[in-house]
Image (tube, rainbow, N blue to C red; front, side):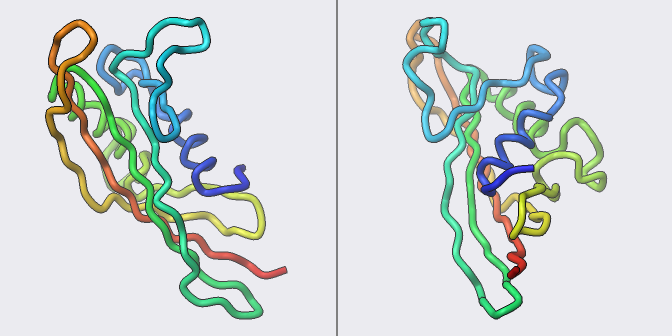
Length: 155
């Protein structure tokens, strides 16, 4: 379990099956932006994903707790639009039927108290050209914005 919704998103992402991503390996996920180099000192190049926290706000609070809602986005960076689309599907549905809710879209995040499980729904997705990469090849990005609702249980 996780202490914060964004930590829960990272934990959930780490469980997605790599076989569903182009190349058969789950893309690395970085918070806010990719570093210039990885832990081995190699330059970080697409494909990878970035996660941005859009914040949360309390809807209503009482002595018994209340709902808290927020947003986050995951952006896929890759050379081809096809790879981005496939990676986005892997993140949304984890290679399963959407009704199974195995991916982030419609999935549930598990958090430590005082939270109950968190529901997640994708709001929008966009794919765009983002420029030229280090080797002069085209790089694209696909952003998915998600909405989450957590229930806080007062102690």
